[in-house]
Image 1 (cartoon, helix red, strand yellow):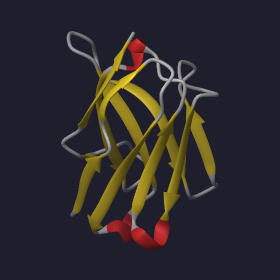
Image 2 (cartoon, helix red, strand yellow; image 1 turned 60 degrees about the vertical axis):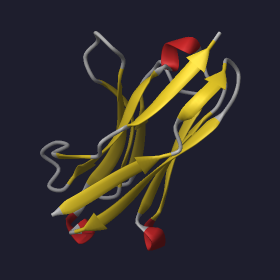
Image 3 (spheres, helix red, strand yellow; image 1 turned 45 degrees about the vertical axis):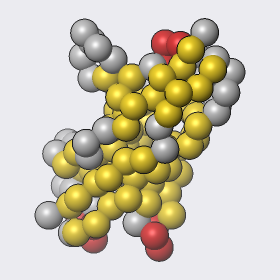
Image 4 (cartoon, rainbow, N blue to C red; image 1 turned 90 degrees about the vertical axis):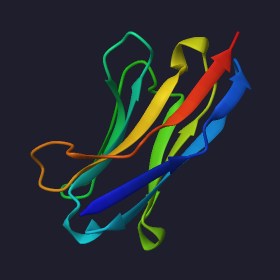
Length: 118
């Protein structure tokens, strides 16, 4: 019902910036919130940032607050994650996710790799 495709990942050095994009298609009119998660090898998937439109609010993990910015272009059905001052510990596969009902993120993209060298 909702298809998500991430892009914008790559290999950068510590201190550099990247902007990730998530293009959404399908039943986007039922969207409640969207967010970004990441998963490094051998670790559990962790929350990064999310934006909620009903009672608008934005959430960030403490590890990225002040460095990452989540935003959206609703006319283009695109979610963004601007990542500044990247650190090696930010290295992970980044996933875009959609919450259609407010019950949880149940639609996921395939992920885009972000690698930050020291």
